[in-house]
Length: 156
Ligand code: ZN
Image (cartoon, rainbow, N blue to C red; front, top):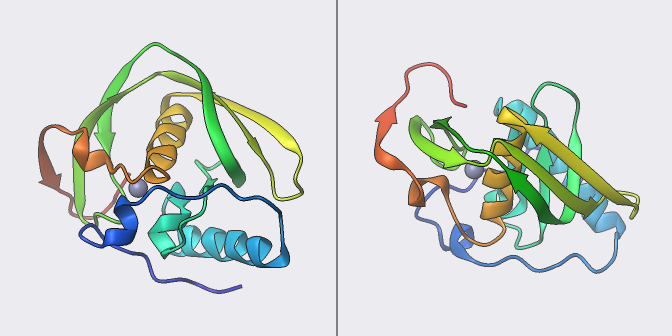
């Protein structure tokens, strides 16, 4: 396990479409473990593989309820709307207002290759949308309403 370098806005790797994971190899497991370490080290609530320079469809999320690993995730249902501040480990020191669905359901496979469904409201829904956007080269700054603001002490 290791902490990986978090790529920042302006790097090409954050703007590419990531590839599906076709097999859960030991290398994939290692990437996931490193992503979790890196997310916790940075006090983030989510991290997508391109943020550590890997163009694979993998995200990790922990909104304080334990780690969730989503491989090849797809949003299958949304409802409602929420508008609020969002930040990103790849855009350090900034926040901006983004509107997202208030409820999101997604399907994915987990680290053992099992099909899973995850769903959530509010922060969880926001985190799923934000992280899945990364897999298609989309950053929240593309969706900000108004301007990015500086944050002093905390992000997200
Ligand atoms: Zn992000």
